[in-house]
Structure formats: C-alpha cells, structure tokens
Amino acid sequence: MTMTPGRLAGRTALVTGGSRGIGRAISLRLAAEGALVAVHYGHNASAADDTISDIEGAGGQAFAVHAELGVSGDAEALWATFDKQLSEFGARSGVDILVNNAGITLPRRIADVNEEDYDRLFAVNVKAPFFVLQHALGRLRDNGRVINISSGVTRIAMPQIVAYAMTKGALDTLSLTLAQELGPRGITVNTVAPGFTLTDINPTLQVKQVLDAYASASVFNRIGQPSDIADVVAFVASDDARWVTGQWLDATGGTHIGLPAS
Ligand code: NAP
Image (tube, rainbow, N blue to C red; front, side):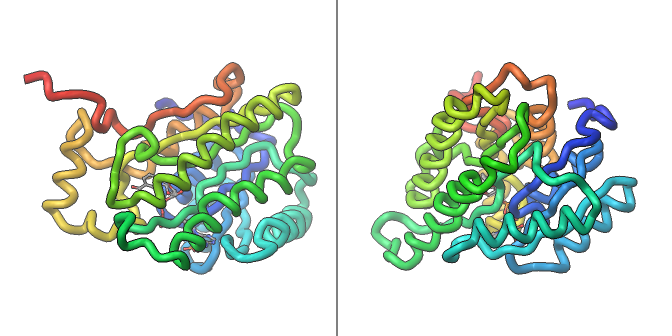
C-alpha cells in the first residue's frame, strides 16, 4: 500500500496498545501520514517512549497515554489522561481516529479455562473497548474513524483459544452495530482482522516449527508482520475509505481461505 504523507494531517488519533506489536506499527504509520498520535499503553512505559521517539525521529508527533485496561473505571481514566496530555501538547480537544487495538489472549481449550481468566479476558478485550467507545462519543469529531482490531479466529475455528475468539466475536458485533448508530455523523466503524502476526502476544512463534506451520496457513506462505496490518488500518483511517463502514476487513494474508491448488 502506498503511503501518502500528509493524508492525515490535522487529525488526532488514539491507538490503544499503541506502544508494542501491531499497535506500535499502527501508531508509526498514522503518524507518518501526518496524524498526531496518542500512544496508549498499560504497563510498559519504555515501549511507549521508544515508539514516540521513533515517531518523532521520523518527523511525526505523538504523546503517551497511560491507562490500565480491564479494571474498573479504565475508560474514564484513559480519556481523562488523553484530554490532559492533548491539552498540554497544545492541540485542540477531540479525536478523529480511534483504534481499539489493545488486547490479550488466553491459549486454553474450553476444558482448561477458569472463571478468573475468562473474566479478565472479557474485561480487557470486550468491556474496555466498549466503554472506551462510549466515552469517545462526545470526543469523536464528525467524519471520524473507529477501527476495532479483531482476529481471523472469528472466521476460522481455533479451539485452542476459544474464549479469546469469543471476545473478538463480540467486538465484531460492536463494530457492525455502531456503524449504524454513527453513520449519520459521517463516522465510519470498521473491523480489521489480523491473522498470525509476529508480535509478543504469541511467544510460541519463536519456535521455528510453529512459525512455519502458521506461515503455511497463509496463501503467501509467510507470517504476518505488524506493518501488514498497519497499512490496512491506514487505508480505513483515510478519506479514501469514507464509503466503507460496518465492514470486517480480512488482514490474514488469505489464511485458510481454501484448499491448495495442487
Ligand atoms: P502485543 O504485542 O502483546 O501488544 C499488546 C498491546 O496492548 C501493548 O501495547 C500493551 O501495552 C497493550 N495492552 C495489553 N493489555 C493491556 C491492558 N490490560 N491495559 C492496557 N494496555 C494493554 O499484542 P499484538 O499482537 O500487537 O496484538 C494487538 C491486537 O491485535 C490485539 O487486540 C490482538 O488480539 C490482535 N491480534 C493479534 C494477532 C497476532 O497474531 N499478533 C492476531 C490477531 C489479532 P502494555 O505492554 O503497556 O500493557
């Protein structure tokens, strides 16, 4: 995908979990296109600092927003910090692009999921983006963008991560439903669904046999890179995608789309 410097000039973006992995790539990409990016993180401040330094080194603008998600009052805390940091940055209030990207996984089959882990997973992956969006409603400018990061596992059954897949199914429904509600304001709401992508969320990808097995699931026979996802998000965030809403964009590199040709 081609980058158009300045395509997002004058826009403010918030990327939850924008400090590491896919979110970091999204932060870098949106900033490279001219957006002021709020790089949210939960625990690892130095990763957020690194991402911001890289953005600034490339001539972009960014600031950090710290808020742990999955705890009571998380969304209010996130937005209060966002408002404060934005004002200290000297930028006008409000947000144009919200990327709900932060998430955790739970690599367990149904027989091995306990209630505590289940509740934590839903708190971070479902409840947090729901209330982040609720508190975004008054801050989102008309013609804005909401992009929720789901997963290919709502299309492809993976019993190994059943509860995680359920959380992403809930997020998919949120995208579709809010696209209907926010359409009159010109705000698009879409889902981008990555496949197997090389980040810290899945440590087993460090094992070559596992990496090769996941790579072979894609018609391109490789594992996804965070930038593969960030490029799709940048398109959805741009004016070019103004006529696309309520959609689930598959960014899995054609994972499990059919049988081998021969
Ligand atoms: P990652 O490398 O583990 O990064 C996760 C990001 O989310 C970090 O910035 C982290 O910040 C933040 N985060 C996690 N838990 C948080 C919490 N409780 N409170 C606040 N921030 C929190 O993960 P990733 O692979 O980039 O995943 C990003 C998104 O893509 C997730 O929604 C994931 O489900 C989805 N996805 C990933 C893959 C894949 O193969 N990688 C595939 C499909 C979908 P801190 O470190 O500061 O907490």
